[in-house]
Length: 115
Image 1 (spheres, rainbow, N blue to C red):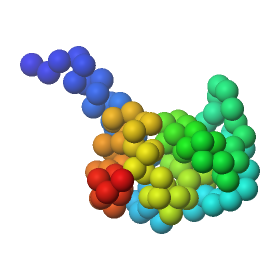
Image 2 (cartoon, one colour; image 1 turned 180 degrees about the horizontal axis):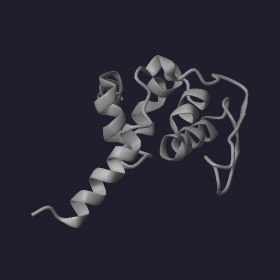
Image 3 (spheres, one colour; image 1 turned 180 degrees about the vertical axis):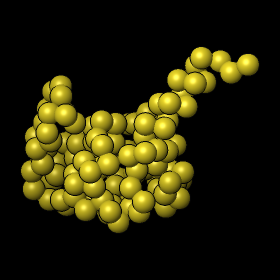
Image 4 (cartoon, rainbow, N blue to C red; image 1 turned 90 degrees about the horizontal axis):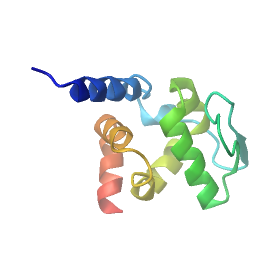
C-alpha cells in the first residue's frame, strides 16, 4: 500500500516537472543588468538582483527555480548562465528541483558532475 509521504513527494515533483521548459534554450532571460522579480515569484524578501554580483545572481536563480512558473523560468533565467553556475546552484536548491532539472537536461547533470 502506498504511503502518504510517497503521494506527497509525487505531487511535489509533478509541480516542478510541469514548469520545466522543453529545451534549455527557452531560458532567454538577461545575462546582465538588474532583474526585478514580480511578487508572485519573490513574495518575501529581496526582489531586485544585480546579475554582475554572483551572490545576487545565485539568489535570483534559486528563487526562480523554486517559485517560478514556466513563463517566469523562461523570462528570468538564462540557459548559459544556468549551465555555468549549475555546479554550485545544484547545492543550493532542493533535491526535488535538482533531480527534475537534471533529469530533463542531462547537460546540467554533466555540468554538476564536472564542477
